[in-house]
Image (cartoon, rainbow, N blue to C red):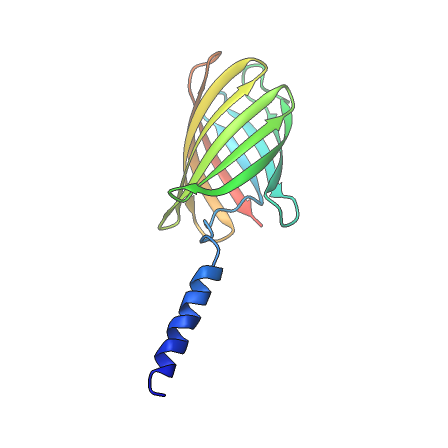
Length: 164
């Protein structure tokens, strides 16, 4: 009789551990953002959201102002988020307008920090990017990133995002 309580406790803990899914990454995919490109002096507006409770991600972006031909460049995309692929990294594969394809890797680093790396190909031009973001609060995030494509020199972006 005195061994029943430890057996029930161990059984309950084992059942809870086996029923527990992978830990949530803490990354928000439902967000809107305003970005500023320090090289072209242009702005970008972006939005993304997971569709319902699924891992399908829909996104849209437009650019405003700045030098070059990127003013008014609009794009939409549909992707799928593979959560916790390896080492707590989420991988998103996407396809979008202008013959765009992409792979984005994101990781919650803890201490309100997040890192991302991406590779994309749009209209035959490939590029890559890296980003470090800080979550000021659960809803507000600031980020700085660097990207480089085959057709242009590298650019720096500063973004503010609202997670919903």
